[in-house]
Length: 236
Image: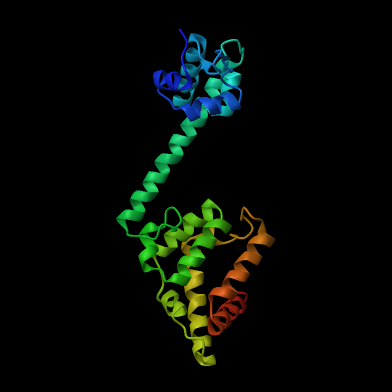
C-alpha cells in the first residue's frame, strides 16, 4: 500500500504544504517514486508524519523535533525543559490576560504600562507619554512607589501640566516653591522614589539622558523653568 502526497496529508490530518515543508527541513524523508514519477509514501512515512504532528501539538518547535528521537538519551531532559518553557509561557499569557482585563475595565489605552490602567484616565497625553518612558527607565521598586504616589496626586501636578508656555516669572516661582513642598511630602511617603536613577536597569547615565530628552521634548518653556527651579530649591 502506498499513498500520494495528498492522500498522506489527508490521512495524517495535515496539509500537502506541511508535508513538503517537513521534507525541506529534513524531518520527513523523501519517498521513492513510482514509474510515473509520483511519490509513493509508505507506512513508515505516515508514522513519522504523525509523530511530527503530535510533537507540534505538544508545543515542540520544528527546529527541536529532530533531536527528540527515541534513541536520544537526553530526550526526557529535553521534554522537561520544554515543559518549563511552556509553564513560563502560560504564566506570561495569564499576566497578559490580567493586563487586558484591567485595560478593559478602566477603558485605558492599550499602550498603558502594566499596573497603571486605573490611573490612565486621569493622566494627560503628556503624562501618559512620560509614564511609558518611566516604565522603561525605572525598576519595579520605583514603579510600585510611583503607582502609589499617583493615588495621592497633588493639585500642583495638575497645575504644572496645564501651565502655559508664556507664564510669567512670578507664576513660575510660586508653582516651583509649592511643588518643592509636595515633592518632599511624596518622598517622605514613598522613600523608594529616592535614588530611582541609580537603580535604573538602563544605568544612571543612560536613564538620565533619556529622561532629560523626554522632558525637553514634552514640556513647554515655562514648565522647564519650573523644573529647573524645583531642582535648585530641593538642594537648599
